[in-house]
Structure formats: C-alpha cells, structure tokens
Image 1 (spheres, rainbow, N blue to C red):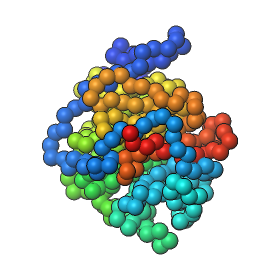
Image 2: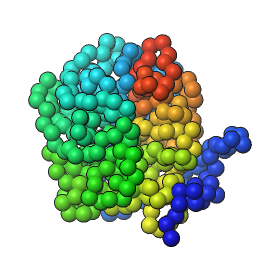
Image 3: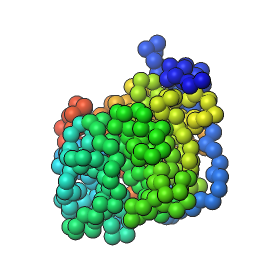
Image 4: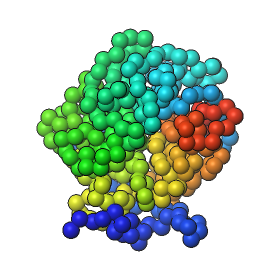
Length: 362
C-alpha cells in the first residue's frame, strides 16, 4: 500500500518531535549516519580548514547584494557570488567592495528562478540558471563565452532546485526541483526532482546507477543544499511541503520518497532522513560541513541549524537575527560564510541587506 503524506507525517512524529502549535519542543536528534559503503574518494580538507568556525561576532564582508544565491570559492580564496535576478556574478573579498566579474546571459528571472548555483573547477566557472524555456547549466571562464553543458531541466515559478557542487570524486552534482509537478520526481527519465551526477563536460558520469542516465538519486521535491563530510558521505537538503524538511544521506540509486512520503516513513522502498524539522523551523537551502558538523541555512526559519554528525541534538543559531538565510559555505581557509536572502520578495529587508557574513576559524 502506498503510504500517504499524512501517514508519513504521523510516522515521523512518532520518531522525531518537531515544533508545533502546542509550544516549543526539544531540538531534533540526529539519526545514526550510515557508514560509507563501496569505494569513495574522501574529502581531504586542508590543514587550515580543520578548525571549528567561531559563531560569535561575524565579519560583514559585503552588503547591498541583490538576492545572493550561489556562492563558490576560487583557489585564491576569493568568493564568487551569484545575484539571482540580475544574472551578475560578483567577486567578493574581505576588505574590498564587491565587483562584477561576469554577467550570465540568457537568465529569465522570476518567482524562484534566475541565476542560482555556482561551482568552480580549475579555470572554469559553472552556473545553474533559469532560461526562458528550461533550467540549464553552463560553464565559462570569467569574461569568456558560455558553453551549455546540460539543459532540459523543467523550469517553474517554484521548485527549480539549483544547487551545484563538485564532489570529492571530481564529478558535478546537481540538485533539481519538481517544478511543482510532483510526478516528475519518481520518473527516472526526467531530470527534475533528482540529484544528477555529471562529468565536468556535462555528460552522465561513469558509475551512475543507470547506464547513460545522469540520475544519481530520485524522489526529491526541491534540493537546494549539497555537502560532503571527510569520509565522503554526501548530504542532500530537502524542502518539504506541509510537514517536514529533511536532511538526507544521499546514496547511489536510492529513492527518497517524494511525493509518496514526506519525512520519515520507515518504508523499505524509501530512505529515511537523518534529521527532519517542521517547515516553519527551516525551509533549508544551503549546506556545508566543517569538521563533524553539518551547517544548514534556513529561509523561513531564519536560523542556521548545526547538525552534529557524530550524534546528538541539532541546534539553532541566530534565530531571527539576520533574517532569511540562503547559502552557507566553507572557505579554503576554513572560515564559514553565510548569505542572507531578505531582498528575495519574501523577507523583511534590513539596513544593508542582502549581506554576506564570515565566521573565522577558532
């Protein structure tokens, strides 16, 4: 029998307490993180990145950014930041004013679409964006011509996914959304509602679960956070609909249940998340790992969640202090960068928004 979302939510409630109208509840605990199975290439952080970010008073490295979305670092430590609505890519360096270094052409911003995720590999910059007819990925050298390497991802006013990142295996991972058409997430031939795994040239990567297919995992609603720990385990951050937002450990060929289930269902056909929050507490977008902690940026929840990967309870930082939080990333020097998203049409704009904050290593 197919498990309904209501039943899935009830099952999740029995396993994990979230906030409700009855009052505050205990912080969610982290389910055991699965051991790595099969050959992986562990992430190897530099010695400078082995410390713990200090979540005390941050440094404000940039203000006045128009809906920052993607954030990626170049080898020299400078950051590239995507403005969702303008299509601009800004270079951001502490102590300097942001400057435009590229403008992605063909961006058709609207709703949740626009210039979204960024990734960097060698001299190439990769960008995921909403075009007039689809969502697509291009690559380019700064100031150079764009090459479309993957297209045909369904666009929508909502649920465009958009996060891209290179994994420790050197392949490009792509989080996509269901474009508000739930049936796409379970259709293995549709790239929407999936995590894709591509070569740097945009082809289906060798070793994918289905030969010739770009799909790495399926059954997702809207993936906007991707991260790896030092063991090479991959985490995908998932927007829920009515009940539960999710942190999932992503494994090759696994099904994460949407739209048949939302949150923990304990159904052998689908993978349970290791953490779930009520949607008012999260709407999670960005993700990054430093040490044994996964950091998750929350939009509606207006907080930064810390998830201890060695076990324990999650903790909310900065609740309401900076507003909506879109992206969190670890810089080459180990510092934690965090972007706000208060100018995206859904937040209350504060003086200086949108801003980029930096938390140094202890």
